Length: 270
Image (cartoon, rainbow, N blue to C red; front, side, top):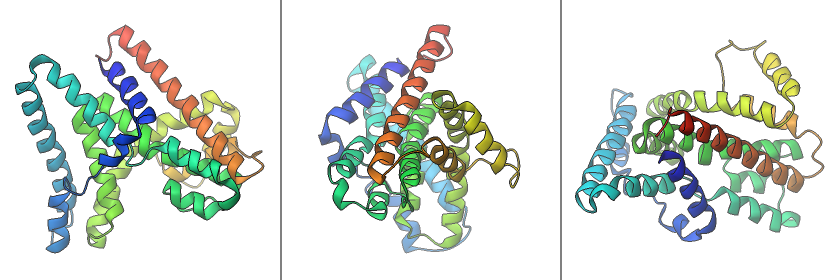
């Protein structure tokens, strides 16, 4: 059932633009706004609020959907939550906008649309797409498969609370730590997948060079961006880098779905 929900959710998000219109997290992040209005200690309370919010929302929604439509309520709820947490905007449409208006887009304009800091070269533009795919697709898929709707909500709430950037510096630091923990296994799997769909030797060289400076367990978005830039080093324009980065992200996602299908056949996931 999980793989079917993921497949259907990705299709709905890709083909139906209306889902992007109701992906608003402001009303769900009301408890976070109370922290903004009442700053104080301890700083870790922001993380506790996000975790508790995800658990409470998942419990209330599960109880409601199970009570209303009966046995079909839980998979319907899982599908709705999965589609809701993809985003907040659709990556495919953002990439299409960059490519349709390629003559009017410089690297910084593309970076703003993709929600990253830098895309000032063809390889960096492709890496920006990869980083955005991590936050919009891969992290949500990973935690949804692992923890269900709680995992998807937890990651998206954490990411959205950081983007608001209205908490104290200490509270934002704790939230960024939580995001690093949530993204660590995702980035590790994305590095492996990137090597499998491109040049494994080249990605391994990036890994080795990076870990000459950092501990072996240190995996960050910057490492993924370095690897993606290396894989797209021969891109000849910003638009070409964005296009190829998007194609690469889709190839990686298809490989994830294929592996999940094998895990379903083996009985490792439901």
